[in-house]
Amino acid sequence: MSNYRRNRIPGGTYFFTVNLQDHKSQLLVLHINELRAAVREAKQSRPFYIDAWVILPDHLHCIWTLSKHDDDYSCRWQAIKKAFSKSIPETEYRSDTNRKRHERGIWQRRFWEHTITDDRDYAAHMDYIHYNPVKHGWTKAAKDWPYSTFHQLVEKGVYPVDWAGCDMGTLNVGESME
Image 1 (spheres, rainbow, N blue to C red):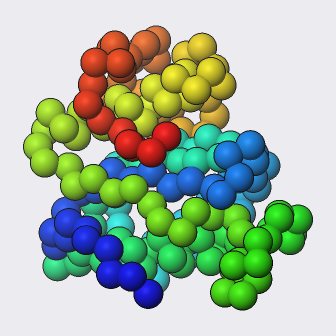
Image 2: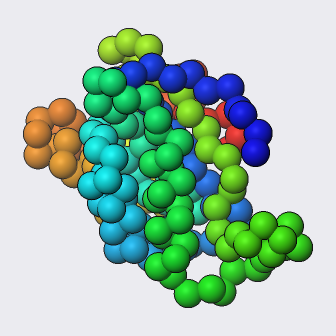
C-alpha cells in the first residue's frame, strides 16, 4: 500500500473531499441513512468533531476536528467507506482491479485533505462547503439543500437563513480534483 504524504497534526482541523468512483452516481443521497449510520459508527469507535458537512449525490465535503492527541483521520475514512459499502446492495460496476482487490467499486481510493491553517481559512472552507450544492446546480440557495450542516449552523446563529455566500469563484479553497 502506498504511503501518501499527508499533513498530520494531533488535534488538527481538516477539510476533506471524498468522491464516489462513478461521478454520475447518486448513491450518497439515495442511501443517506446508511451513510449517516456509517459516520455514527466511526465516531463511536474513534471520536471526532464534525464542524461542517455537505453530502452531494456523488461526493461530500466536510471539516473535522480531531481530539488533542489524535491525527489519524485516514482510519476513520476507511471505516466510514467500509461500513457504507457493506450496508448497500451490490449494484455498481466493478472493474477487474476492483474484483482482484475484493473492492466494491463505490469509492475513489483516495480522498483530498487540507489542514485548516487559521480562522480565515476555516471560514472560507465552511462557506465553500455550504455553498457547494449551489455551485453544482442542485439548488439555488444553501438553505434548500437538505444534506448539509447549514441548517444546524443557522440555528446556532453562525449563518443567517438567507445566506447566499460570497463570490466563491475568488476563494482559493476546496478540492483541486473536481
